[in-house]
Length: 298
Image (cartoon, rainbow, N blue to C red; front, side, top):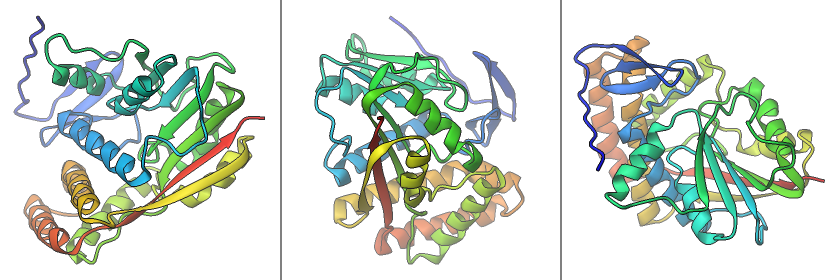
């Protein structure tokens, strides 16, 4: 039986683990050797899983590409690995690999499964950095998938990442990328104040989350053919509205240390805006269009 012991540091400290550099800010564990602005901790893992279920609910499944019986599936920057594990359960004869720079979120998922719990036997997690050459051979996968990677892929690096996705794809294989068309919108002025500053923080790191409309051109540039896209607006019914509000409010709370550290808000100012945002969004809602874009390797 495995036991896990963890104590929150009392002050900001730096931890080096498995060749990655972390900094503790406001109780959140944040990678410092990547442009990713969100923390990599349990709370972020819970948010990513919530986000997964929201996207699945809105799109009616885990993908929109016309795949049939893929034998080898790759999930790029897989986070908690939930998408890959569900794909492994759906395609039991397929080999499914998810990779991410940080293993702690899949490890947390194993903890949640409890004693005797395990991932599907045809799913494997691997540590790798999506901003570097993928550790896979040319033409190794039938289906290569990436979802909401814009929070860590600088605008200038999108061609590189998509080129790697195409490189490891078999001829005739399918590539699918899922991204927001633009940032979430809400009638709540408090929510938009925090959201717009979060956008500015990302821009300072060369990041832009609203790349959904650019995906067809980017996939074409990477060499994909027969490119199609499907758009869904999240937050249009009561269930989605609640899930999206929880997702977006959690995302704002998670970047509080970075916003305060950047000097835009004091902790008190942030807390007041976030409390107002939470109250207003519950009543007024949030919406955001998401794009599923896919194509085929010639």
